[in-house]
Length: 142
Image 1: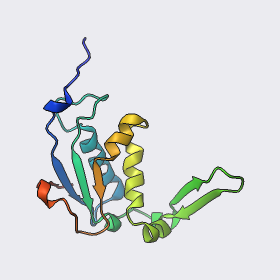
Image 2: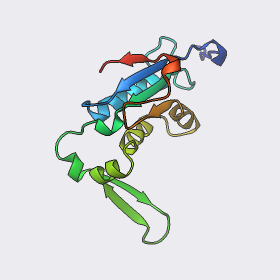
Image 3: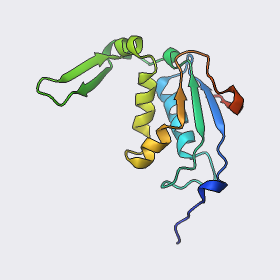
C-alpha cells in the first residue's frame, strides 16, 4: 500500500466556532483537537496538516465535573533546585482564563513539530467577542 500525500495547496481550510459556555472542558477540547487534526475529513492522514481553524469563545465559562475546581492541580518546574510549582484550577482560571483550555487541547495534539504547527490554528478567547467574523466561521454544536 502506498503512502498518501496530499498537496497542501489543494486542502481547503475552513473556520469553525465553538461556544464553550456551560460545556464540559474536556469535551470541547476533544472536538477542537479532532477538527485541528482533520479527523472530520475523508482525506485524513496522521502525518500531514489537513485540519481546519478553530475559534473557541467563552473558554473561561467551560465547566469541570465534580470537585475539580478545588482539587485539580497544574504543575510546572523552573528547572532550578526548589523550582517546582503547583497551582489549583480555580487559581489558574482567575490568573489566565484561557490556560486550562489551551493546556487540554495541546495535550490532545501530537507531541512534536506537527503538533506545534496544529496548535497555531486554534484561537481561544475568554469572552464572547472575537476578531474573526470576516472568516465566516461555521458554528459547531456539541
